[in-house]
Length: 149
Image (cartoon, rainbow, N blue to C red; front, side, top):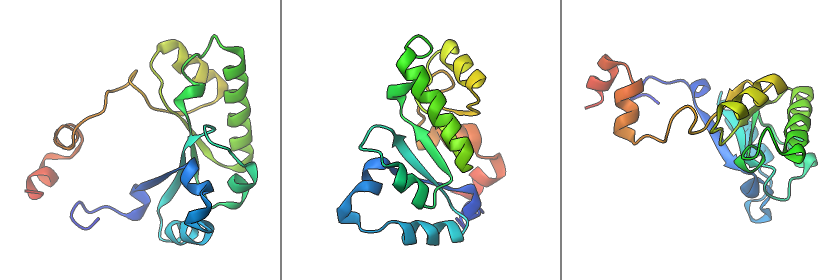
């Protein structure tokens, strides 16, 4: 954080749903709360692909859920996926959580999500994954990038 002059509030930590539900990890609540208290945002990745427990979602101190691409892939044509996505967005709004739709690859998917109220999306429609060097070249301001060497 010091190297790039970042604050914890500028960093988001993502844990997959399966890790949060893994009994071997123990009670994740206090650990996640300690991270949130330091200013880190906590997200549940791949939401909906494991054995989701809405009780866990209610109890764990998270800020965001990342809706798995499995529910996005067939949008807007698949009625079941559309219903699930719409329901998750409504539930998250009621709980004060942000939702990121993962795996957005088409304009039609993006338009459906926008109309449904999803304001955070990611996927190949916007950009392919970048290497660390490509990321720095594209997004890190020049003076900061030079100071990192």
